[in-house]
Length: 383
Image (cartoon, rainbow, N blue to C red; front, side):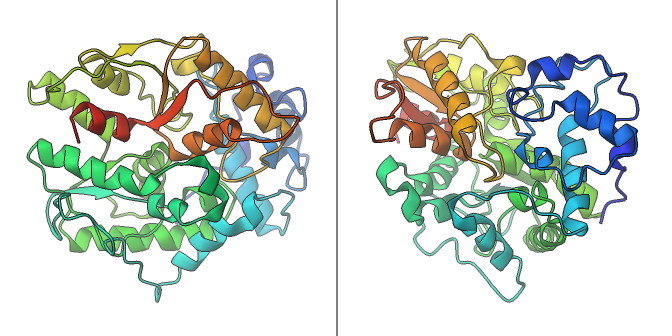
């Protein structure tokens, strides 16, 4: 396990200017980032505070606002880990904890998933090689009844990503027994489960002689690129998001789109891919190179993009819904037909709002379709 900085170490240089508090999407319903930092620096115990679980860890308070570059999301993750160790669990997990329960089951070394059970033959993969595609939990999402009304097809994302890589001459490794990256349990303070998953996946990729891992999910990308090296000493793979891989191929003249895709789209910057990893331009470069496609930016984009409202299946409530309403309103006001995402959870949360029924249903968002970046590229390539 990593030799962690303490929560106090992470925020030690904070001089309480308050810029973070002005940017926090939930600052009006919870203790602001500045106050939580102040309490830690004054030696107060915040482990039993509900506010450490309300935080979205979106990093909007940090990027680009904090003059001291305090990593507030990492501070919250550390405090949560300490709280779990001390037995404080003051949070609500959504959907009856089904997702984290599944993750904890996967951490059992005797459980071997079979991710290739229904794999399509036209998406060519290999068992061994230098480049791998990390599938993550996408297929699992399709088997959860909560999402039946949304009309989403998460199981098509990974095969489409493989078809795209095949088009570029890559036959990537897709591991039959790869497990969840562990993002959600890590950000819920469960380091023990995360450690098991990280070690298991590392061994699996090394056995397949993998050198580079391509991801399609913003959370998987952040987890593999930043967190795995901190917990697994010999995790030495190159981690690249598919949008970065494709943008590089465009620069090298190896990727061209064969037909016009006449759509107006807008792009949602997920917190993990954007503010956590600094990847803003690659998805846009790919979309801007699709003939016929018009990209319309929302008022709040890139570093200033709004969060989708929920992180790690925690506290999906009326406040989270209000944030989603603001974000979808911003997207629909661009006149776009499609809201493009690079995070399956963001897609899930936006579609949940779109499908909401009842008298208290918010504004009508049926005019805009929510689509994964991989799906968009696959359609533009004619798949």
